[in-house]
Image (cartoon, rainbow, N blue to C red; front, side, top):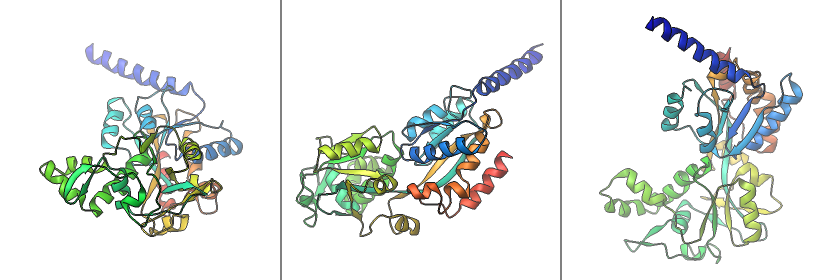
Length: 341
């Protein structure tokens, strides 16, 4: 009797979860502010060129989107999480604990992270060490760890403009922030060899040394933006000394008001990101809930449409907006085809 009861209960539970999900006829997408415009373009085109309604797309940040995605299976949870970084093992564990055990990673292309200021302001040529010394909570001066005393970029490096340090960076819920912390601040800490000095404080513990490297100052010279890039743009409009962290595509679509900086001697562009010369770039992802495939109408078709040559390939509308096409797109298409068919 107990075994029969468990089987019946398991069957009913699975049926209810699938039925709840199937009660919705629109695909739901949530996550990265960077991926948001691409997902919106694809959603609108999908609605116009298929028998399915346009998916509902929202931003909010990579971490926020993945948290919602991992909340469980059913119509009240997103079918897709968009991300500007890879999903973390801790997030996958939370997914699994909530019944989301079939998470399919789909890479859609690449984007660069750029540093831009007022189009009428001075030109900047940054290094990773410049950003570390300007933004870190503590810096190393004459071999000693001290609270960051720098107030102008020219104090960090005489070659930089004599302009107040004021940086608008993504908040911690954004995938862009994690890439910025690692590829810019942490690398700058290492390039300046400050990590060697900081390590002495924590008995050479690597994780704690990293935490010290990427800890940002809180004296008002670093402003964390929880909204999307449009909020950063608005902040720059009212703070002419500010420098903002943006996605390459967003900058390219706002050239009339932004001036982009070189980084490590390279000007960011689709070409330099694609070639690997511009080092602050990252892949962009969709994370698809396998449990919803075949249950939510149009989910499989939307994912296939998203990574089609016509959308994500060279010459497509996503490249036109700023996405750097993935050279391995054919391989991704093949993977998705085998996974969902």
